[in-house]
Picture 1: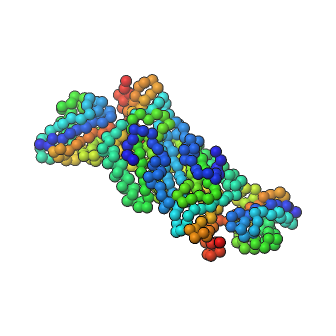
Picture 2 (picture 1 turned 30 degrees about the horizontal axis):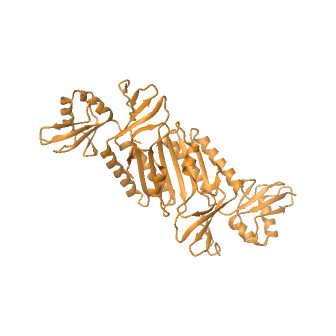
Length: 144
Length: 144
Length: 83
Length: 83
């Protein structure tokens, strides 16, 4: 399984890759494209090589911190329609505390560190680059 | 969908019942039968009517506390083999903080309040009632 | 003189040797503790129940000093192990 | 005189009008900031990049005062929006 995918994310595949009878607690996080304003979908792009390296680093950190947990993720690229998942993270551990903590750690780090970008597609055909830092460049960001 | 089920839990069905384009963050918790010692499976039984009522109360509390979230769960009854899920909880919300919090709330309350009991099946054919309060009645709990 | 149904679950059903029984308790202010005492008198296996088991009345967990009314369903619950 | 590859992504690629370019910077202690300055000279659209964009060298995020060496891949990254 690759960390970056242009196809819909399969929760079952993610689950299968980390669950085992020794791990009684599994926490999954799914981030899905939300219907803000007139958004009809989001086009995700990435610096693929760095995103893959960064994901490996983040998962490695989680592994080091919660040694009995197993965590994996998949980030979708390309056009993701409303309601579909752009990211899926699964953490399985012997107990639920570790599963929740590891899953949460990974999504927070992903949000901070992954070289991935979102271009929102609007109902009127325009697009907007999303700047989660909040420093939206008015007008200039809304092209075409 | 019923809250108590004698069939395997379908994460997809749970997801479908709470996700929507307005909810961009989904947190799932799965509790699976763990391979402790020589356990080969767990036989779950419940006070069905009260368990259903208690689940409705717990979900109602979560709903009241995280008003934009939708949460559901399914608890499996009967024999659950090693590695299969005995409980699945899904919380979907506009943002991930609420999704994680609501999901966590529900599993903690379920553990405290649901009238459900586990009988561990051992490789040697014996069974043990599980007492999570830790006050294991030595010997007496291991029958047949 | 409330008539109540008493239900046993899991290990307690094994100890009692039955899933449910009908019990009549005397007095106008009968409690779950009174029901429990009556059950111990009438069902031999119920003497092995712990002194203060978890209990529910009409699908809600209650303390042992909770009142019972005619027609109530009282349940005696082993340590909960859901999830 | 390090020769580096500079890569642009997302909105920065649109501004620069290209996905990557080769840049030579002078001096033995050249930094990402020097690369950025050189890019602004050679690619007109790059003048619209913010003064201090996020940057990476060889797949790791770095500060603008990080050194660059011959053969490095320098990337200029718009605000990250993964997840």
